[in-house]
Length: 125
Image 1: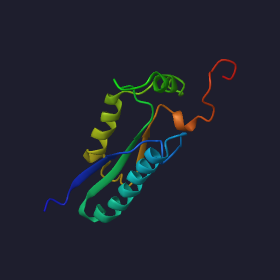
Image 2: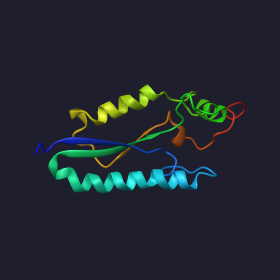
Image 3: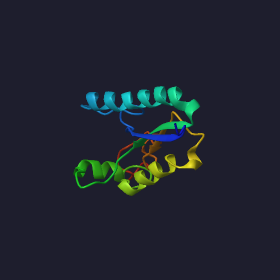
Image 4: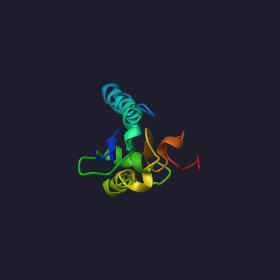
């Protein structure tokens, strides 16, 4: 056996970190991915296998709704993320540089989950 590996699961910030109305099933599924990630990480750590999850925030894709784009524009980074930014994190997690990082949710959301107020910036900032 190789006794080496990297598992990178795709979760979300919705579920493990925040909740949204009408997203009960989605949030539960994404939170479940984090639980699975952590359990797997414990089970395979002695074999030099790491297991982590990525929690994207608002990411602009061809299927993004106008509301999702606006939500991304209201995060501290003032823009939605890109698929390439998520891919870069996945590449890092699959690398040797992440060999001591396991069982974690890596949040990639432009600061969205650290910001309490999500409304218009005018008059607040």
